[in-house]
Image (cartoon, rainbow, N blue to C red; front, side, top):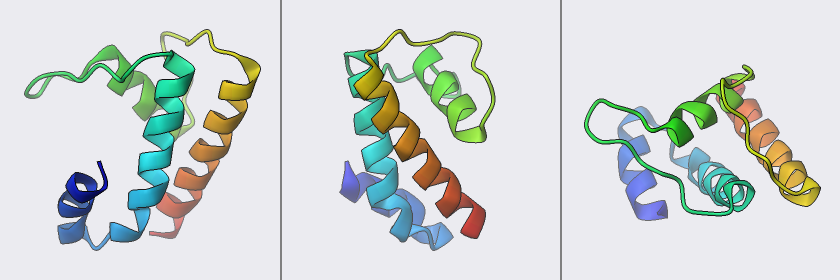
Length: 88
């Protein structure tokens, strides 16, 4: 995942965010209990839409029922990504 993220973020000078974003995706998948469903073309999947809402600090329309441990580490990853986005 890191090489793809790095290529995508390089033109925006955001390569430093790659490890934080990769961790966020891994912890999100752990909370989901499955891989993230990816939309096609311009259409985002429900998983992608929910993750964007979480990163933005908004309440998503659908929630994830996950163990407390998974919710805790996902929350930490979200805080890290939000902090990095605020600095960029």
